[in-house]
Length: 493
Ligand code: NAP
Image 1 (cartoon, rainbow, N blue to C red):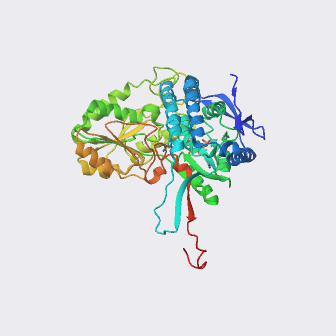
Image 2 (image 1 turned 45 degrees about the horizontal axis):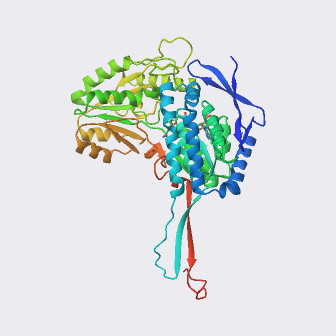
Image 3 (image 1 turned 135 degrees about the horizontal axis):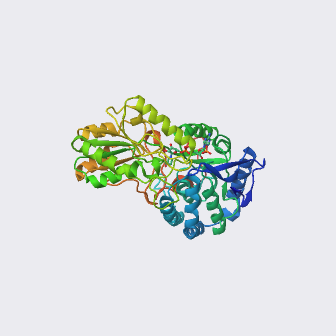
């Protein structure tokens, strides 16, 4: 098969790596290479960051009003809408996500750009009611400088949009480093950004491996903010890299999110919510509802019905509209899932469904929807993120026990609560320690709704009205109104 060839976007130019090195991206449904991309070395990262710095300092970008930046973002959103089918097909081929899911995500993507475009010229500073009558002071929000955006493979376009749009709205420039497993759509996004009219160097994309390309980018002294989405182990490298230059950081990490089903819940909805939480996207979702906590009275019926529903999930080629579950995005991730399933069996979790690769033609990295029943909440399969279609279910007696289990986690990204009792819904929403709470729904996103986690799920928030502020520095300006000469220089004023 002839491989598709991609180049990187540096300073508005389409370039290969200076070394000429390349790597291949594999199609997870076929387990075979479909594209070849430049393997950026330290020298390529250097050119990209220098280009971003030059653009940040250039009048072409700096003199653009916030309203004009908003218009460019709006145009980019429109171009994404015009190219949505192409982007959806590309992402599905590159990371194995269902075409129906990538169509949904890309279809909504313009909203992130349009919403953020509207925020660009609403970054108002304040005037300060100072306690010093001869002084006047005000604050302004200034761009930070060069931003590094580090993107994982599971939802590259969405996870880039929620970094790129606010970073640009605030007047920064950016170097994006998508995952080596799913870079194609981010390069296409850069192409659309150039078409929209963003000046050269404002948006750069370097492709390559995490420990080389990614590490070179995150430790670069000109990078003033790192927006990272990925796993905890990589995040620790990124935090250490940021310590050299005190680059600002946002970390969107993993989760082991509880999906809590009370006996009074609408069971049909809760079962769909459980399926959406863990089997959609083959469980490769940071917000996966991988811990199912189910109240005693309905536990047996719930488990039976969930098994029955999950058995009917159609596993197949992600580019087939009828498929409900595609492959794992990488062979490594499939191996991680298999390892954690083996550990779960070894520690005595009861396998109710799946636990193996399905019988499917070809070599794709498929895995069956899997369910474990557990008696003990401290089991590894109840505590560790799998990032695959593996749920573990446990019973609870009452609200207090559900809450104790929900909060017994190193993570705190999301939680689902299924109940018809309004008071209980709000009590639980207040007490569960996670950044997103979904009541009688799951996996809902909006450009207007912040996402981010508590505890080991990271820090900082993306999306929502404050998203642009996270890409700014606050400046305080003091003005002396007095005509009197400057008083005693050795005393603080
Ligand atoms: P990952 O291995 O941590 O990789 C994330 C990104 O970091 C990739 O671009 C990777 O490049 C890069 N990277 C790897 N090593 C690096 C280094 N030393 N320095 C700088 N960058 C480096 O995560 P993943 O396996 O792609 O994604 C799965 C994880 O992301 C899960 O834990 C999931 O929960 C989390 N996630 C969180 C959210 C959220 O919003 N909270 C959303 C989606 C995913 P390469 O891929 O090329 O190695």
